[in-house]
Length: 217
Image (tube, rainbow, N blue to C red; front, side, top):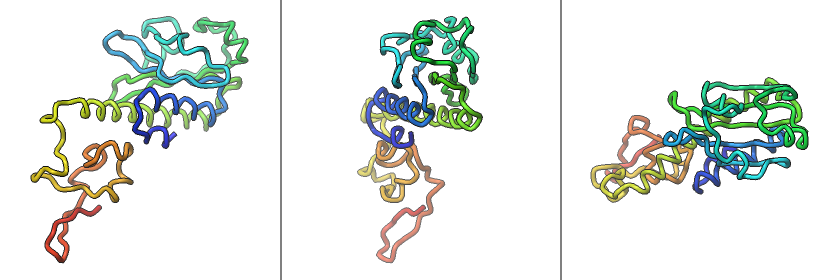
């Protein structure tokens, strides 16, 4: 999962890799990731994986005010675990459920600073154990933070040049050493000067014997 989140690809490709990783590590039948669109108040499918995953065009857009379990996760902004879907009225396609042998559902909201970013849904033949459920909660938080960082990176790259953070050529800012920043930046090397992964306060300024300035962790 960490490798998927550290990539510099487009967000849909990163989230597709995350969905693949969830299926592998949780032995799920299907894992899906939706991103929340504030403009349309809908969830838009970004990752879809698993041996019995529905086609991507199925439930590609889910209304937040809809009747599904995924919609409920988005509305309530809280985890939803259903260990037996046999008679659950929120199931939208019972034929697919039976064909895939899916019995349990675990849904997690992707949240950043109290704001909804998306929803993660995992469909399994057996209910997740407590350890797996706890791991899913931690993974959902990492994915949410990753989505927010990636969006910020894409926003900066598309912003007018005068709006961007100072670069190496700027005389008013220090050159951040890429070798020591590597361990601090979750999206390395998407931010060349590591403005997103480290702050000035976390660095100590020292001088070398040649009187040139360098920055050390």
